[in-house]
Length: 346
Image (cartoon, rainbow, N blue to C red; front, side, top):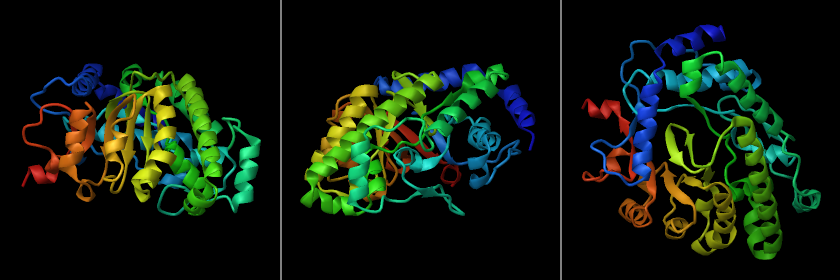
């Protein structure tokens, strides 16, 4: 699987003007400018003229940066042939365990999914973590993420067009509460009641570490805070927070244990927030966050979509990667689409 063969192949079809047009379309949506066609990416691919691109097994790519670069570029190469608005994006793809590993938590690879974090064993271990304070940002998988990002830049510089169109986005840092949940485990929910001050101390430490690590990564990646990419889209701001664990909380718990810490990250970088599951209980609070520019939610069928879309409009937030089936027919801005090719043929 020679790396050069595939990078040279992508170099031959790379057209920076195509990617500049895509970036401009996403920016127009964030600026509230009406478009004849909202930016979209295919959720399933149409027939392709050339689908010859390696698909390395995740566990192999985890241990081999060449394979990881090939794996990360695969979607960009395939989508490049479809005419959709998929920007070419890559990341150091080490999963949700990155920040927990920096704090010293154990993790493991599995046979068929991204790595799993192991919770710290008890509250004494959480107290010890708090006593140690902010860890070295190169601890755990932190150094590997920084080095892999630098490796990407060093390799791609030899392919001028591909280097120009390829955007490196930040690794999966989750959000402060998600990371605290990964470190503490389900006992954190009992901690809301019998030691809330300890929960807040952990969230404070995680937030400070998140900001310190992301600043170090941005320096290594040459990545700013005005506009960046994430997954298959351009976004305003410098980070994509995840609040997947927050869907298990009440409105009051979200306000106390999630939103203030997300806000500190948004104040540092600006950005967007993702969550899976149902966020009906917190979305009215979430949309009021300062320096929040967009919402990404992956399960519209579980949410009150008319209310959610109305709140996004009221607060001038972009709804990112909305399934076309849930998109208002008259929408001309404020939304980017996920579109099914199979459904479009049907």
